Length: 222
Length: 103
Length: 110
Image (cartoon, rainbow over all chains, first blue to last red; front, side, top):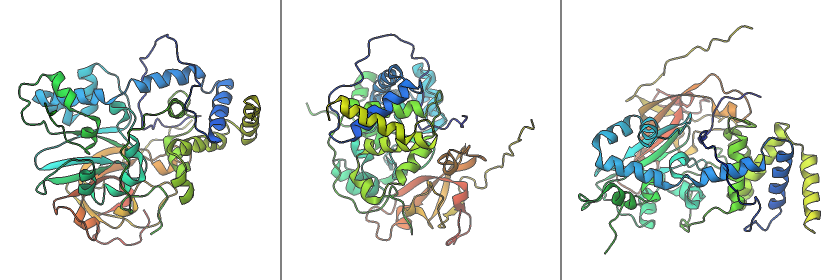
């Protein structure tokens, strides 16, 4: 059957390796009936050759390799390299692929939202849980919660307070709702006092939540 | 205005539970299954149809059912819609698995 | 077999245009949230053309593609008692068939 290629995730095609995979079933199964359904679907699809156990194991490895670390690298580089930042803002995915030697391929549009002293960006998907998985991995549970999704569009400042972030009333809070084919990465403000930091030291300041907009990068208290 | 179960922007909510819940291996399997079924090799169904299936939950089910539970049930529904599996064979296999596991 | 030539329409809206989100009956699968229906905003980006998610949701090809826009709204225009700064905004990605240039567009289906 033919469908247009329309996915909210990317597919890593250059992941050709051979190694031992964990056995598919492990602990932490849910208590309810659903675990039987999950096993039934997995077995039937494997038997029919639709999706094999090996493919599932490999896909899990691929997904595990996607963490906020990549997003942090992008942000840190944008902080130290103005020309990279310019390219990043103009053509995010192309620039990231080129600079980091990746082949992230998706029909979705990645938009980088730059925080400034005048604008603080936050990201949500009120309708489900769309998230820049190709850069940051799987979203946190709170991002997918109805509490976050319902509240951040109507009371972003209250939500920020709850997350312990403080944004001035003089700064515009700009909430981007990922309703369709766009995925967002927040480029947080570089903290003061980091002029002598190396790129690696800067990366350590960029947490997942700073790239969603519920946190601002902080220097660790010594 | 008629509001779908998933269309929650602006509704009253509670304090956000910020606890980190690393996905369990079970949840990762469901995630992987979805990626592969909607991926270019298999193209069993679209992510849009998954969302549509989830939107068909009643408000009660939507709030009671877990995130991945909703995914799993939607995946089942869509595999049947697309005639890749039948409800009968799925139910038969579930019974078989239960017996295997001594239930 | 005759090849179906897809007519590529140009976008109806440009950056800076003022638009109103329609408020009619939604499709079975809809990506225009209720909180923005009937609200007036400004186009900030013409994103591109994408398959129609309402059709994809029903296992259909999703053609013709639709123009997608990023639309910015003042929060004080969206919520009656918005309790933040008057500077605050919300941006959403909205498909063309949900937008109108008219100032008032009550109960018109997309």
